[in-house]
Image (tube, rainbow, N blue to C red; front, side):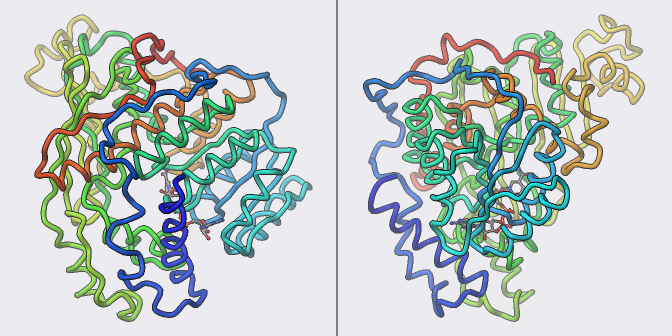
Length: 479
Ligand SMILES: NC(=O)c1ccc[n+]([C@@H]2O[C@H](COP(=O)([O-])OP(=O)(O)OC[C@H]3O[C@@H](n4cnc5c(N)ncnc54)[C@H](O)[C@@H]3O)[C@@H](O)[C@H]2O)c1
């Protein structure tokens, strides 16, 4: 964290979370309080530069740790998402939750009661002030800190957790700026601790199915992917006591892709990005902003409390990324338009094309798989697709789907926590490293910069500092 941005980041938080929570500070939501953009941009002029590895630091892409019987987990942020993740962590059967923290202390206390009732063990409770979490990271009996707070806190909390000897498991997006990308990479390397992005969409049944097909050569040579976060959040963005306390602020400050990792994470895993290929540059273009302003005017949410707010984030942002190997990735962000949810989740290669929402697969040679389809000119029919699903269902999904049944987002939330915590238990390198967390999140500031400069190409910094050429392909994970 740099000094000036650090201070303004905290002011930013105060002005959003505290005001949203109704904790006073009259007039705090006035945009003039934050200054123009300020803390949401990196301190350096050229954000594309790959920054040298500080001396004494070692890479962590193959970091292994001592296996442990039970994983001791602490939580910072017991809001909507924190509570979902708490259930998943408790349901793994091999974790103890030893500390919980929330700015609103009653939320941490409520979580502690839940843990006590279910397991007979009371975690230590922190909260009531915006820095109470720092003490949590100093507590001894913690292996992993789950960071489930608003985005502006993620980097600071990850760095402190790792500096205090814990692995950081951070919600999406890991960070907001390129400075923060380097902050978490350096903290992870400096401390030889993992910084894992809790990208649950990498563990969705469709995504794991596509990954398994890609690994088994069904797509041939991969050439192109499309992905997105398309989710009508007009209600959520004004929902006070939750994301409406802070998430809308980004729509006032940034015009670009504000939430890239749900779409990009799985695609990067299909394409071995950071493990044999690397993102090279992107161009980004935003539509006009219209829908959020219209919502504000028409719905007058929270009895007109937000009247006068000005938004700059285009309703639809589209970026195109070129990789070092010459592949292309199209990624979109739209949380405003009235349309059904989609992450697109598409992959093309010389052997097949897959599109999700709904799932469709076309094969160059369907006969090779004993299917009834004759050519790639139509999507496979239901029974052919079912046969492919059965043949290429990912082993991790097969193993955990029954236990995941009651977990969030169709079960993928449980699979995510189970698998990533199991990596810590076994002492093996997690599937999602700090280099992935930084790279996937970097699209936020890179897209903002491209949009602001008339959609000019912006080079993507290499957070592996050249190691992507030798880092091995992600294996087929099992539980
Ligand atoms: N992976 C997913 O599917 C998914 C879904 C929802 C949210 N998320 C992510 O989870 C994170 C949290 O989102 P949410 O929906 O739970 O938001 P939320 O507003 O409901 O919860 C955030 C919590 O953090 C607390 N908090 C804020 N500042 C704090 C501080 N300084 N110290 C301690 N606690 C603090 C707030 O009081 C609140 O309880 C975000 O990063 C979001 O993007 C991910």
